[in-house]
Length: 231
Image (tube, rainbow, N blue to C red; front, side, top):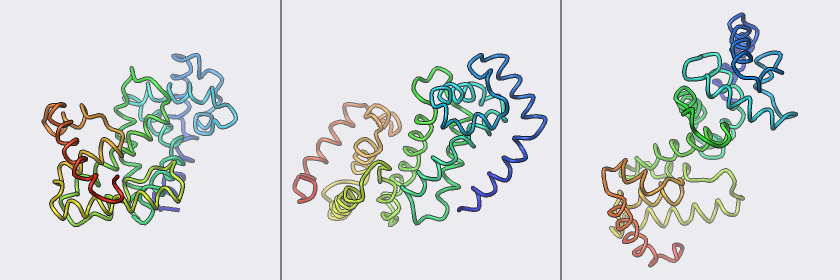
């Protein structure tokens, strides 16, 4: 277990029993009837026996989190197991991955949009996965290709699918090194095809129009079809 996980669990034991946590619980239950059945902040962390209520409870925490540190810390604790699994699956041999993922999740929790639809846990984990992938894709122009290939692994993939994808990724890096595609084009492919970001999002981030981004990706993918594993 990463030291940060042990530290967070030890910290949580203190937070959960604190007067601040009891006051926070009273605030949440007074403003949100969906959480009125909770007896302690620990009820928000382990919701496996009540998954439907759990979804509502996490939404309550997400709504409170931008202005309530106890709510943010409770939501982080609720997501900690999923964050550790994400770090292990995406960057299993990076000793700093868990700390990086926890930091990303904390920032996302404190800025969670109140109007966002969908399950809170899934949204935060997806956002963190995208950001983790982006940090590795941003290094495509550097020798740190191994980190990029680790960051592209989908937690839902089977071991066989991971092996195939890693082989494809190696071919993509080789294509870049041979000058078939640029680092920027390859980053576009990773972020849209692997990371799940839309062309509009990536285009805005790279200060390009969506149409120009689409043409860049289309040209690069046309060249990549020459590769045995990219066809």
